[in-house]
Length: 151
Image (cartoon, rainbow, N blue to C red; front, side):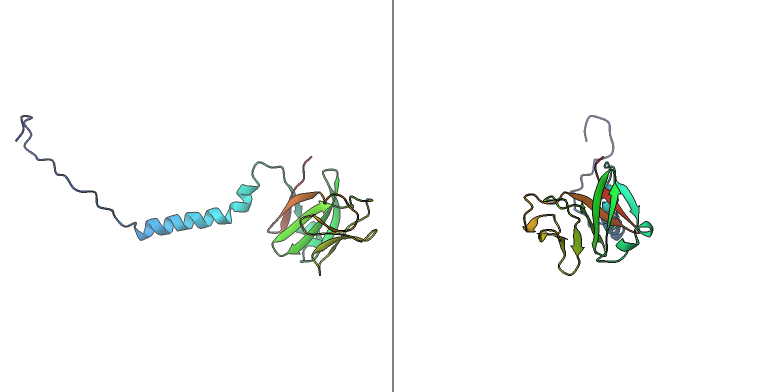
């Protein structure tokens, strides 16, 4: 016994690792799944996006569709290349400012004036343009396309 006047002994138990409970595991798994599903919404936070409802852009409702529109003073070629994917480009060729078109069969952007050809990232594949297309971020979000076009 010690001098402290205590009648109880301190019990010392070794640290034994415990297995996580099923509830804890599935709770963490659910949280991770929700984070993945919410990614597009969190990825767009802090940027000024323009929402284009697909109801106002019937040509973009189906894969392979394209349209030209003006957003924030820029004329854009919008392309729906997959069910969950869209792209936005400057609408005029940087060579002599001819109108561009999307070729859904080849997944390329074409300029009919001088046979220029661009890939989906805007890179020049053929023709006289000396620079790639200006591109803008586009996200298919349910029944709308979100576009990140600077003011």
